[in-house]
Amino acid sequence: MRILHAPVNIAGQPYALVKALRRQGLDAEMWVFKERPFVPGYDRSLHLEQHRTGVAKWLVALRAFIQAARDYDLFHYHTSVTLLYPLHWDLPILRALGKKIVIQFWGSDVRGKRPEELTYLRYADAVIVGSYHMLDYVPAGAHVVLPGLDLAQWPRPQGRQTQAGPVRIVHAPSRRKTKGTAQVLVALEVLRDRGLPFELELIEGVPHAQAVKIYSTCDIAIDQLLVGWYGIFALETMALGKTVLGYISAQNADRLEGARGVRPPLVSVSPDTLAGALESLILDPERRFALGILSRSYVERMHNIDRSAELMIQIYQQV
Image (cartoon, rainbow, N blue to C red; front, side):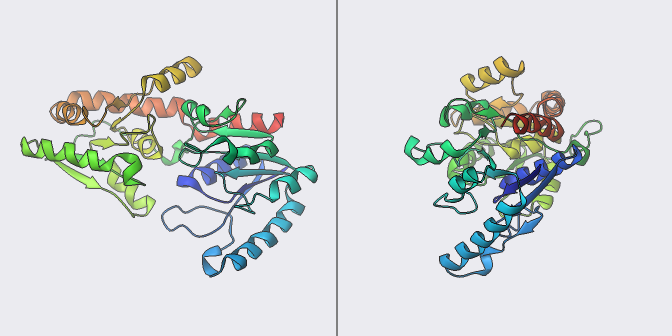
């Protein structure tokens, strides 16, 4: 069976999954629509960014789809985007050709969508989401496969990660509004007025490899304050043994515990409680160290990309 993943490499996760599937012996490839300078990783790019008009872009995608329909058996689409997006004409064609279709959502690509915006999912043989709270946004019967990291590329931190000087705090919003960045900055200004010893690394528009180097020098990471779950930034900083703060709703934490027997080790905060939680952590290096150990262990247990690939193979075998 030949498997095509396409056409968006969200936060590098789809291509990481493709590589893990290959390690399991599957014939899988990743095609993307265009170059994304801060999210590298693909086997083939259609380079739609090189074409000016929508018609020209669509014709390139159409030619790629014709080739893919001939060469691949299972189509694994990431986000609501398919090769013939936005009309999703490829889905009924693939179904008529006897191809298998898997559609995987990663967060904001499905949150808030009305049911009538998801009618194309009737063509999917399987729908996958990346967390238990996202089951609220998709039809019944969807699978949960947590995002993952290739832990061989994220070695376990050795010893204490304390740094000399002020406590370093990192926040890396993909979208400021979604992540609650304005509220983060307000809370930090309150702490600055109190004279607490910290410095902020606000990371935006930075290549991923460079961003990870910055994460590794920090003591505390602030993820998001509004969504109720954590994202890839939190996952990566936890893998580095960092203390992570973000808004985790009790309901979502309960769902994970009910399904997998563990609760996320993030310090759950709201815009109103962020300043107080940060002050406590800035002044308590022992607690930061303990939370960092818990964070790394949690990633090893719940977010190993090879385990995610094993679960994905089980889904492929069912469709």
